[in-house]
Image 1 (cartoon, rainbow, N blue to C red):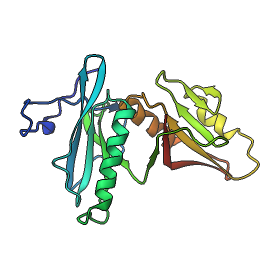
Image 2: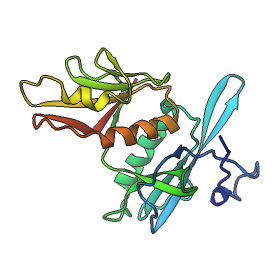
Image 3: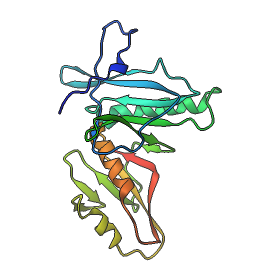
Amino acid sequence: MKKIVVALLLISSFSCGKKEIQLPQLGETVVADVKDHSPIYMFFETNGNDTLIDVNRSNSISSTNWLFNIDKRLPLKLVIPEIQKLQAKKAKSSHKKEGSENYFTYMDKEKKTLAFLPLIDVEYVFDKAILGLNTLYFKTDEKIFFNNQQLSEQELEQYLNNLKVERESEIFIGYDKNLSFENYLKYRLKTKKIVITKLSLTINYTKEFIY
């Protein structure tokens, strides 16, 4: 894929000079513009065979919308803890403005424009869902599982709507901790589009399991 060198990510305070972020590339725009924002950057680095994350949060202003500019190659196990720290920091800030939100930035590869995905009221849990809960799980090898049943992307929605549900039930979403940030956004968008026709079955979007 073409590397995206984001001009507005060039931070003069870095002594190492220019840094480059390869933003995730998705096929649609969810939000086209965000006003009154401040950027946070998560860079991809390596040390031998180890993948590292370099976070710059110096420009984050609690009273604004935050834009998370995250390199698409970074795994969730490195990204999510940093997001949790930043969310906690903003929540505790006395300068937080009512209505200010957090967004993931990415490139719309069809329009070739910058786009934004809202990150609203999500609790991340670094563990498997409690035994007995219905879990939709996305693995690094692009395999999708509902509980122990492997599914293709094409049959996912139909399978969920054909489930026999005897009482009100929730479906929780889990992601492989080694999943790339780009694929995380891809699957996150996909789950938001799933239409459940059973009134007794819902997808819980407020909690995500990382394991």
